[in-house]
Amino acid sequence: MKALILVLFVFIGIATSAQNHIQQRVNALSNLAALKNGQLGVVFVNTKTGAIQAQCNSEMTLIPASVQKTVTTATALKKLGPDFTFKTFLEYEGIIEDSILIGDLYIRGTGDPTLGSSRMARATKIDELVDLFADKVKRTGIKKIDGDIIGDASFFESQMANATWQWADLGNYYAGGVSGLNIHENYYELYFNKGVQGGTPSVQKTQPEMSNLVFENELISGPRSSGDNAYIYGGPYENKRFIRGSIPSGTGTFKIKGSIPNPALYFTQRLRQKLIEIGISSDSARFILKSNNQTRKYIVTFKSPKLQYIIKEANHRSVNLYCESLLKTIGKNTKKPGNYIDGKNILMDYWRSRGIGTSGIHLYDGSGLSPRNGVTATFLANILGEMATDSVYRKSIALAGRTGNLKRKFAGTKAQDKLWAKSGTMSRVCSYAGYAVVDGEEYAFALIANNFTCSGRQMRKNLDNFLISLFEK
Image (cartoon, rainbow, N blue to C red):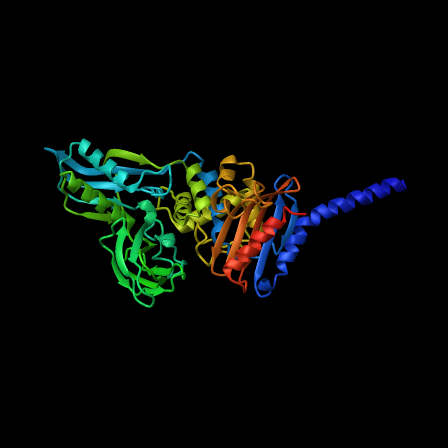
């Protein structure tokens, strides 16, 4: 009997030691001096049993930054399916007589965020797309358009950028917002001629060309090693842009990325110019935000890559536009355009129906760009736990040392091939969410730090070291 009791105590001691391995690391992280005045939310949940292995303030509402994309992409996958595609339609309204379209040509979008993308491998690049659409018009027999070329962006609400995004973000590529008709991921590259320190570097060009934009250049040339500290200011549908901040001094060129203020109009302008080049004239290019397309005639339908590839790109590269489009698509119904409110409500309703609590959850967008978003570590981890057996979803989360932003960061460390994660960063926010295999057990986890007193780079290093330590004994 004594031998049995001794064996039980030894077994309990071993189990307790294994159980506390992750919790001990969490406790050490929570005691960092940089978090004395900040907040830390952590939870590790066993994906097989649902048991909580370790936690710290797991029910505290915190700003998630880009780890919110894990929720949006998971919801889109469940609601739309992995084979879902966005469709863009080339149509016309009126009649064709003697090779003249007496009426208008339309490009009608349904929110495809990959349309004309330059970086998604499966997407058709903007020049190829414009050529394709122009060729389809020509093959229809149209030699002249006695009317306009119109970009129909009515599939989504007119509000491109979320109302809670910060003004300093809006003119930059990552905060351009989402339209019912997107193009080239709604961004352009702005090139400068570098100059002497203290001077103003001159604007060289935009790529693709943005002839409608007017730049007020207030940029300063900083020290050679100062990096990119330039910001473009300007909201949706506004053509004037202010450039402030600094770029490094020196020789050669330097580029930053800005948001296209009206992608629907820009796309139609590009198509109109191409049609003129091949001899098909029209009155003007314009866009609409409300539409009745019942009398239009079909020319061609263009499909996006499948959703499974879009969510992989969204999570691996942290593409805000993709998740904003997905959230509005989730909320789209036949009665009104896709919008943030309906998308958020359907997202929340879905996870509640799956038994996941939403107390303390405040969602405003799909990408995590809003500083007013609030989630708990438990909410994130429970959704990741629900998605743990979904192979499509799992491929969308980067593998340490192998893919996405974890490819170089954890290469050669103990975390390689044992950690899958999505990171998030914004001012005073650092976060991770994903999966970790520790001591042969898989856990869905969420890790969010807010309002720390060290630099963002140092906090990111702290979180990286914490994750690596989980796989060390």
